[in-house]
Image (cartoon, rainbow, N blue to C red):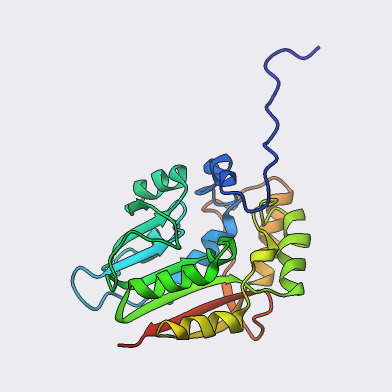
Length: 251
């Protein structure tokens, strides 16, 4: 007979339930943890952000999670404010130098035109009203300010790759996405334009060889850690699954 406490089974939560992030709080900064791909995407998103053009420049990171963007912004000269609903994630973001703010991406408690850059990484596909989140992101930007984002397209292929396949591999936590919320790239461009931001989008994907090597290590129970290079996010011709956007707000 086995002695000791019986492990508590994981909670069964609806898809896209924010409480999942509390249950996965210990995974944010593990190099080969459940959020490993978010690290790869954060690096690629930060590459779209130029150095600050003025002292005191503000970057607002919507849906910042545990602050994964922060290491890739080091030295660029921004005050990094992170907005998220999950306090357990914000506590970790604060530990990585982010000024944190509990808030909803569709109603951000910051002033109009306060931001030089707004980042919305892997956020829009989690928001029931993504159009309101886009409106907020654009509202926060000063004229000439930069919007950078990445999200999943509203296509059959994206649902297949991100949900049907991705959740069967150690690349996407089970139930983290609701495919009904995926965001059509063409509609996103139109919506951003309504709020004064000319958004250009391009498809992106993880490098195939790097991802295969990473998956093999995970399946063997190894660790990527600092001993292995993480897979890179690369541009691709198709926006059908994952895509990146970059746009400037007109005056």
